[in-house]
Length: 197
Image (cartoon, rainbow, N blue to C red; front, side, top):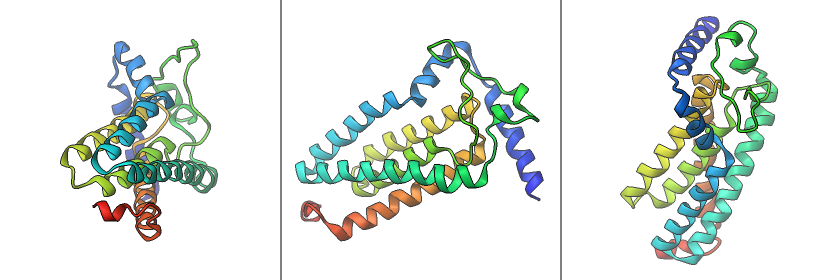
């Protein structure tokens, strides 16, 4: 059963990874990069301040820090290092079929050795869920944050370094972390932001 599911996962990956265009390579690389996090963070913080003021924005900033810290460490140390599933680019069975991109420095991008779960998907899902739960009454926000999460996650397949199951697993893990931190933030109530809700 597991072998059949893995076969489906690999087939779906190869299909999605093949849907490429040369002009999209730098776009997908940028959307997958850490550099994109800066304007996204700025937008989240500005939006938080605009809707509920400084104390709430500071709480969101603290929450974002914990989201990244927990998501990154848990996805690597409790998943990648435990399951040790080879990335598509390092998989001896399909590695030659994977379409990769060339990094700005001219090197082929192949990623690290292990893939399950995707840290990008985990990080973005934790941020999306944590901030969505705090800002869900503002309908325009959730559209932006979840489109961003899905786009960043898809870039990992496009770049050839994650299977769909890595992305789904990362989203579930990240969403759980974001929801947990939201629950914690309501109990701690550090800046009394609930008074402004």
